[in-house]
Image (cartoon, rainbow, N blue to C red; front, side, top):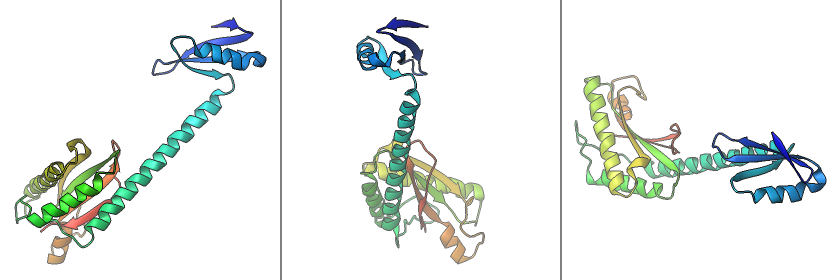
Length: 209
């Protein structure tokens, strides 16, 4: 369905976004003039020459790949910052409670500060418990603790929509045992940074008391 223009055939296609794309073909001597003229037509979204579509698509794909690579690098950098920040530190809760001591609030404030420049990322705050006691009660407690950390991060300036709080209870133990050492490892808060809207990536893990 084309019309002749300067010895050039003009075809109109609609992309899924309903943005009009014009594909020109024919007399290449008039290629530049025809493309320039068609760009002036109201409602035209993009003008390409037949045979150049693949190059345009390849360029778009390359740009997308570069953006994804940059996003992955930013996520990894933010995760590394949190891992470094949490090294040797512990977020403590009162036994059987989601109440955090002042020292733990300070750690969360540092995490929030580290996340401020990480535009385009989100963080999952994961609560984990040991294997002792009721699994149902532990899961409820772990959710309350994750929610408490999220609330503190929001108070420290991180938008709530960038934070997902999830309690896993005893479902993901680091050690499948109920010794004192295993319990200490399994009680933990995990921070997982990922690109906004994507699955979680690597994590920073520290124990909860």
